[in-house]
Length: 484
Image (cartoon, rainbow, N blue to C red; front, side, top):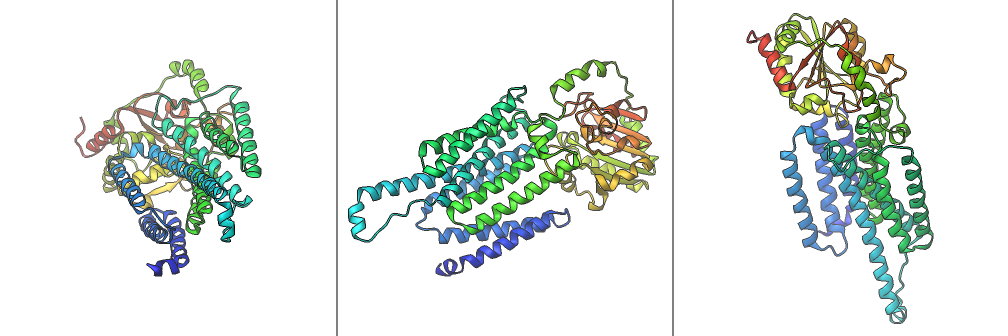
């Protein structure tokens, strides 16, 4: 295996190029599968190369960890429902952050052991011409940054997982005390980190790590549900930078490159998503919830007095089959009802009857970036039928029927019409401009951001209550002449 050691840098370069091609492939649905394959090959090259160039590896521990991770990963991938994919992604991010923290701790403890061993045998080792190389300031800085970024990523991702999975322990916090506490913990963390960097004091390192873990939690806990897709994207970026920090600690160029690619791409995606909501990243992370419980509570009295028009799946099927154009707007309700395959069947039936059918995707629809795209791809919906917000918005006024499946905030006209709304100014899918609007929901409850939706009370809107999959299947039966 000397060949691998000798040409390790070349193998790492090949892996880096493949990772870049991975990101390029994942930028579009048609090339996503090929992009994933590039990524798998690149990761295999990186792991195998590192395995053979590592100094005195403990084989059984490495192989054991790889096998255990592969078993857990494969089992989770095969069993996780699409509705739980966002929290699964958040949990994966937390593991990268935890790895960064543990490696930083291991590196420091290892150095301290070497220092102690050298002190015990200094005379003998010095006489033999052996010198102990103390950690440089650069190395201490790498550990400082890698550890606190990893710690923040770990606890923030764990909280994001709990929030997305609706766990009782992941409760949103609010109040005037939150921001001062965030600032206090952050400044204390930096102070301890700087003291560790300048002196190498271990107590400062432990304090910095604990404070970073606490900051990750209180930093994400106030963020509202409507902003969680951006948080997931940003934590993806953080996990990348944490991995890059591990690369510096381990002096592994491949890990530095791969981590930097993940970090930068996640940051760019976060920016794009914030732009799609007309929000700044600072506003999302430190501006509190988008909407929130106070808004929802304030709206309850008004919502109880407002009238809406409801209809049946048969009515909806009749209207769509007699339309010239239909736009389907999927939301989290489609994921929750696992209705993507039923929606694909409805789409095909309508096309057979000469109806023009397209899908409108908002950048923050669902619970994670690209959530709706993933669901539609899983159902083999034609790529050319899936249009982004900027591509489809101008077509809504000429659209006969818009079918909204479980979406709320991304089609809320308050973003355009109500300056007092927390989402005012956020670009939305302008479904309210269509000639007829049909909305599938389980109830009139508010969406994840806690905001009521004026679209549901529009004179052109027909509400169809029930499970998304069942309702869509009934629509298809009605179009086929099997309605009841």
